[in-house]
Image (cartoon, rainbow, N blue to C red; front, side, top):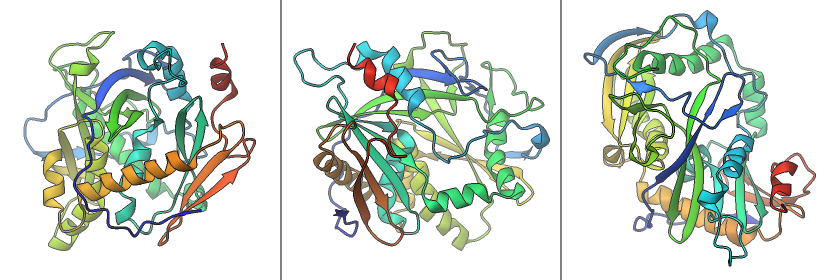
Length: 360
């Protein structure tokens, strides 16, 4: 089976319900889930936009993830689901267990959205259906595995620069200057869980959040629906129009899709030089990015493609995951190939403890 990408997707923007945060969790330095806000950080506004942040400061002490894959397993999110069953359970008269039709990570949706504009990137997304809900998880392609196994020190440095930038901008407490002397721990995360609807399809997805705007110290349970978050990015200083075109073409579509899906209104970008020194900061309104980048991509195209692809997934994924796992593979410069694989294959991802919980 093949899902073809070269269709006219630039139609009216489909109905998309404003994302609503319904929960949160933290991941600590051991990569264990904590049902609290222990990893929540606060935006500390720099005094001006001209700065000198050394992203290499303390890099020799950084605590990196030790992962053998580029994509996180869905297990921690599933644990949140089990711990918050009453928030998302379907009506007792329904033949479904949960309200959402689709469960996944925000990053997976963002990757789908930008697919019509990125012919070079391949991806693998697997689907597992259970009790009426389809769970989606990304897997490494051969190219992902090769890249992961051949990372250089420079690659690791580039990756760490983004985390270090966050340390210059975010603090453990409101109105307290960030402590940039402590080692950066890249394993820690604060995640929110969002409900939304794309046309008639209910979505539930988790997303790592950078920091929150708040002048007051927040305690559990958080007023999650009323919190306002900021997204932080780094990019190389733009020296000419060609570089600015590349920023709009390749980065802004990713920045917009990630932020749009979680209702973030502002992105703060730190522009760095080749030595890893952030020289200036620039705020972008998320709503402005499609207009700034209209020569290169269309927001309506990204969402219409996502809508049609998820519709195709729902039509294709018939059997429960104890019978079939469905593998959707985007071939670079080509279409999306669909294959059915065994429920005991390497692409089976719903853990036994989660499956068994439905039978309690």
